Image (cartoon, rainbow, N blue to C red; front, top):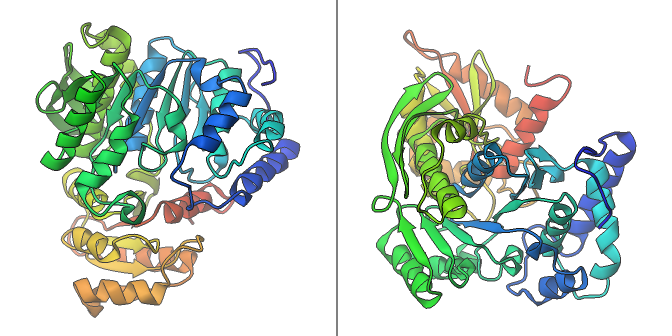
Length: 453
């Protein structure tokens, strides 16, 4: 990896932006965004040739079905508030590849992304390496930073995910539910077994509350590896949460201390629960779960936490929210958050779903909160055809509640018009959801010159 001083953040300019696009294209050209192989041999060989950069720093490893990214980002923010130089890897990105690799709270610059990719390319050419090399690139970037601690979000599953070449001192599990069944298994038990593969010997395991069959797999993994296990509701948890401007105020019990009146600038009770998991993970990392965190430092870290694409407001009059819920479990959390944290006279959803997802389950989960569905398609070639998705939605909520707009800009315009027809004193709102790719498309529109106007 190229040497680089901490005070040299790198550049994002026209030259390197084009090169960063090249890196993204070369990564995807290896096999494709959604076709990872269930093996680690290529990744292990690649990192060995690079000198095992993933062993240059301690690791907090995060998996689960929903809440992984938010929890990872909160862990990173709290660690950074404690004065540590952090690395954060999340996936997928919403708009730019750089979002996946974050150093000290900032997405890696195009210049450093390109430099590290070009450094490792000769080694990748020496092994049968496929899409897993996104993980190798992140490991190299963090070693180059250098990072004091790295928070790694699993891409899919756990046992054979590319991030699992790293040895996490802390293994973190957010709620486990059905998703990616074709690759991870058809039951929650099977999915949990695959995800439990990230637990390494003598690790500290921190888990959100789980269904009994999932918890049993985590307990089994902890016993086999002689690891400790702290579970939400028993070892730690949220004691109270109150709706506040821009988010909520949370009181929680950690594994080592109690923390009152923490400001969390994120919406939804599920985010309070993610925060409790994050705090327990940091306690486990910094003090082996035996030392309470400094309240003021923790408050600073949580207050600075962000989670783009998760109940994020991107426009007003009417309010437009984007949320990356892409399975029924996530959609139920989204619906509850809208009901609890917003006062809309009418809620209109702009919906697009990818082909391997439970579209009917997502619509059903939203149907009690959303009055109208505007069905569209994201830019992904895996997006379900708008007419096909509309037929699924009609089967759940009836034809009177479904409108089809293939073009995304038209869909947003229609949703706004429908929201503005809300009766009573409360204004209407729009939520864009169903797939991460749709949320990314809308965020890109909001960041463009014309915005969402």
